[in-house]
Image (cartoon, rainbow, N blue to C red; front, side, top):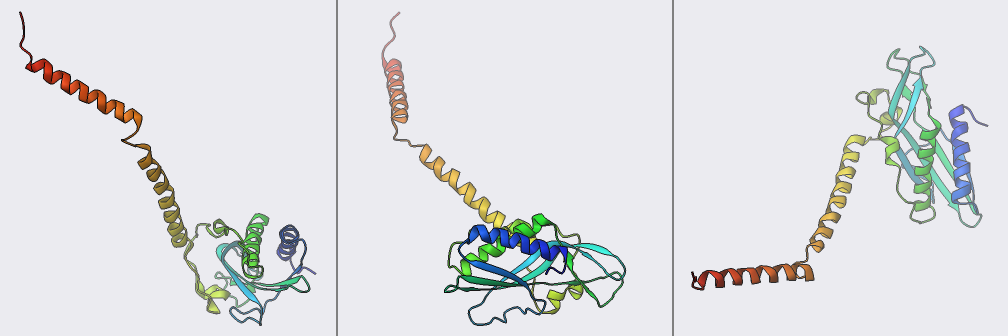
Length: 225
């Protein structure tokens, strides 16, 4: 039974996408608020989403805020003999910095964000549980511009020692790598485009040589009046 609309949406999207990705296997998604990073049972794998986007709503003072630094922890296990898999998920909470209450609040997410995050989860699942090429991660899910510095004292994940990478630095590094690979290809093609030993260039050089010889002969021959 779902405890919130966001959890219901997570399960709905996960089951639909897993039915397409791995129709022969049966997978379940379990919400586990006590899940700990790097504390894995034998045979289990871990995937950590560090910068999901969502909105928080304080249940005490009704203050709302947007965050692009929501951390989601996944533990995954596949029983190949039974063809059954399990994913345990924990969405880390945040404290309201307006009223200062010690009550941790859950986040709500848009369906489009959940779909992108589930795609990332399935990519990691295919790589770690099935040893397949999962494809490319949807980094743009985590590339929302920050509205201000991340306040680690109000973040449950930070308090448990999970370090965040900065999306801007990671994205700039990847964009620089992609730009370099894109610009290197046209240059390589252009180098092969100017072949000075092609028929066109040979004809051009031959015509220039004949012109030079003709001019030399014309200047050396005596003029008759």
